Image (cartoon, rainbow, N blue to C red; front, top):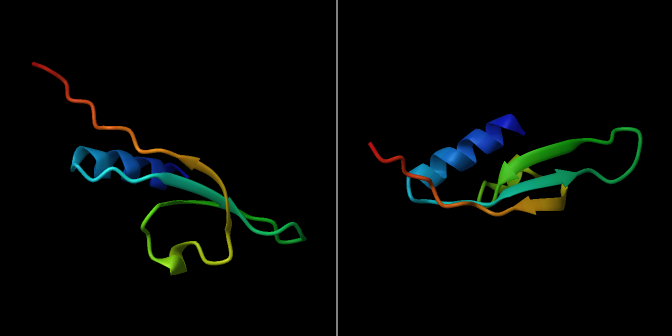
Length: 64
């Protein structure tokens, strides 16, 4: 999830805000969770069901 959060922040700083999505696999022995950005190729999150979405926030600009 940390990677997806960093990428979300980076994309926002580039003027391309993207939602962070957290998904899980169906219940069972091999339960897994995974985070990705909205718009990532389907192969990045194949088999995961969206559970939560964190909207992109505009990049904050610091003033000197």
